[in-house]
Length: 107
Image (cartoon, rainbow, N blue to C red; front, side, top):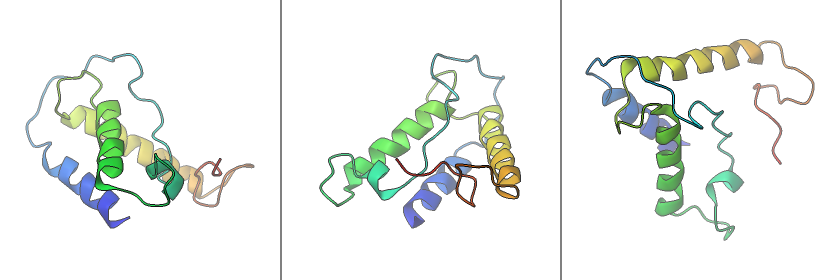
């Protein structure tokens, strides 16, 4: 979990330059899955390798980088923040089929 937080901090720090609003690209903005152990352990060997972790981080970055310019603009990052705020609001009133944290149940 520390690695996920570190990755998000690094992404946050690299977004200092303003850019124009992004143009949407296919598949962008899809919900990022909950980071369960099984999600990270792509080869199902009961360990999470650096490569598996980096692959997920890359996929998350690509979903956030809606115009595929290989950088996250402030506007793109603000979309992430808005989604997080929405989820936090949902956490205060859990819906049926969701965990108390507002995340979907594991598969």
